[in-house]
Length: 425
Image (cartoon, rainbow, N blue to C red; front, side, top):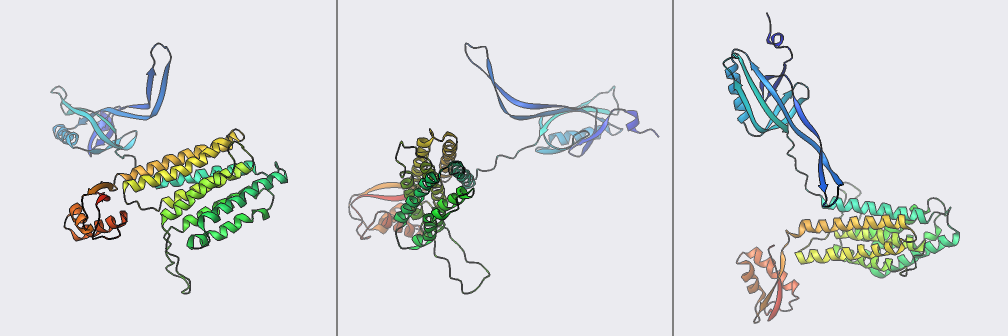
């Protein structure tokens, strides 16, 4: 018995949405997406590559058999079905496609037992770019800045290239950096206690081995105080299983406090090197210390829970002040160390962009601080009721915010004058 495969040599089986047919050939458009730019008065042109182009796949098909009309009806139904489809392509295998142009189904009285189809599909790729993980972007930019800061130390504090006196000049800056941290954290409290060991290690850098390990050890010592301070604002949970006599971790510090301390430390550290001196390696050590400290400041700021758009804008501006201060030192040192200081500057700009993007991602969901004017003394609870209505929970939250935000000494006599209150974004 002769099969259809033998009768129609060159036809290969395929299927679209489970409806089988025969495919004699296939044509696909593929390449690159290129934009061509022309300029007035000039004969040259510029081409910009915009990425890969997976164009349409166009192919004919044949439905053969005594039931060719029923096959054509089934194919019509498949073509009319919305959404993605599975195409079993004889050469490309299983393809997830979508019909981008109306297909055709043709029958002819001179071609009994045969119906012809044509269709154009494209690969189905509906996935949109995932939402930008701004915190991950900040972490990546911070890691890159840390790498560049350590590369700077490795290039400038290489013992094989420096005299002992020059190394001593660089290490002397560490004592000044330690003094900055001692000044900003004070002498008591959880933050001072957490940073004390790291500051002591920074004061002891003179005991480091003067060999190839010096730059890495110096980088770790410079990063330690800021990292210890930033860690105090993180919530540390006790281990689920462990010795029962271990003390509970200290309650987390206000991240606004730790961020402010680290921003203050950053601006003081970069001021240790007088403007225009470009001294190396002292300048390089100060630049590396500033960069590593600003990383800790950004890390601490990521723990801040903003209560309003104004709050978020303020802390964004504070972070940018610290970043720009370190970038200014990098610019000042660039004439003497263009490659390493330039790399630090570029990493700082990338970190700056991620901080702005992170704030922009959350600021639209935050309430706005609105200013109101009270014409007479008014109880704070009455003002809260006027702003949010009679819902007890909402009234309580607004009442507490009004009292705290406006430093109201007597909540029963608020005003007269201007007050601030949160309103929905």
